[in-house]
Image 1 (cartoon, rainbow, N blue to C red):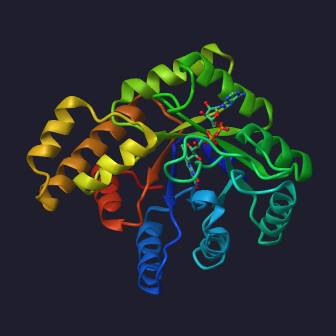
Image 2: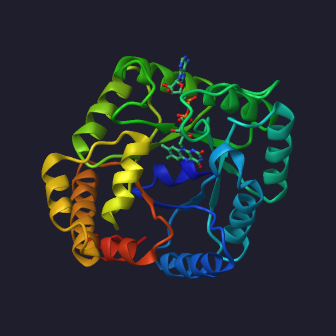
Length: 290
Ligand SMILES: Cc1cc2nc3c(=O)[nH]c(=O)nc-3n(C[C@H](O)[C@H](O)[C@H](O)COP(=O)(O)OP(=O)(O)OC[C@H]3O[C@@H](n4cnc5c(N)ncnc54)[C@H](O)[C@@H]3O)c2cc1C
C-alpha cells in the first residue's frame, strides 16, 4: 500500500519511526516494542537509515521484518549523502524485491562535526536529486520528503526553506514528514507558508515524546528544534528524576497531539526512539486507536 492512501481516510493516519538497533539485546527489545505497538494498528512504520548510510543492511532487515513478521506497511528511509547513483539504483532495486512500496528520501547529515560534505563522484548533493532519481528509475515507489517547521539549520531562511521543499515536491515527493517540534505554532505557520507556496501534499507532524533530559537536549541541538522556555525550566528542575521527566514528556506530547488532531492534521508520526511504553501511554490518553 502506498502510504498516501492513509492520508485520504476520514481518520488521521498513525505512524511510528524506529531506528535499527546495534546489539542482539537491543534487537530482541525492538521486536517486543513493535509487537506491543502493533496493537495500535499504525498505518505505516518507518525505519531510519544510519548516518552516512551506515545501517543499510539493518534498515533493510527491519523493513522486511516489519512487513513479513508483523504485517505492517514499511517505509524505508534512504539517504544520498554517502552513496553513488549505482549504490542507490541497487538499493531501490533491492527494496522493490522486498515488496517495499514506500521510501522517505533524505539527503542525510554530513559526518559528525562537519558543516558540509563532498558528495561521492556520481552522487547527489540534495534530497531533491535523490527523489527525482528514484521516481525516474522506479516510478511506482511512493516517495516522501522531510520538512522543517523551524527551518533547516543550514537554510538561509523560512522562504528559502519552503522553496526547497517545493522543489522536492516537484521532483516527485508526495507527502512530507516534519522534523520534531514542541510548539505547534511552528507547525501551523509552516503549513500556512507551504500552502501559500502552492504545496498541496499532506504534511505530517513529527512528534518526539521526551523520555530523558539529556537525550532531548542532544536531539534538539542536532536538529535545532527549540524547547519552549516554560517546558525547558520544568525539565531542568526535574532533570535527574527520570519518572518526572517522562511524566512531563507524556503531558507535553498529549497536549501537542490533541491540539494538532483538533486542527485536522492528516496524521501523527511518532519518533518512537524504540520505546513502547511512552507511546502506548500517550495513545491511550488520546484514545487514539485505529
Ligand atoms: C522525518 C525525518 C526523518 C529523517 N530520517 C533520517 C534518516 O533516516 N537518516 C539520516 O541520516 N537523516 C535523517 N533525517 C535528517 C536529514 O537527513 C537531515 O535533516 C538533513 O540535514 C537534511 O535532509 P533533507 O532530506 O531535508 O535534505 P535537503 O532537502 O537536500 O536539504 C539539505 C540542505 O540543503 C538546503 N537545500 C535544499 N534545497 C536546496 C537548493 N535547491 N539550493 C540550495 N540549498 C538547498 C536545505 O535548506 C538544507 O540546508 C531525517 C529528518 C526528518 C525530518
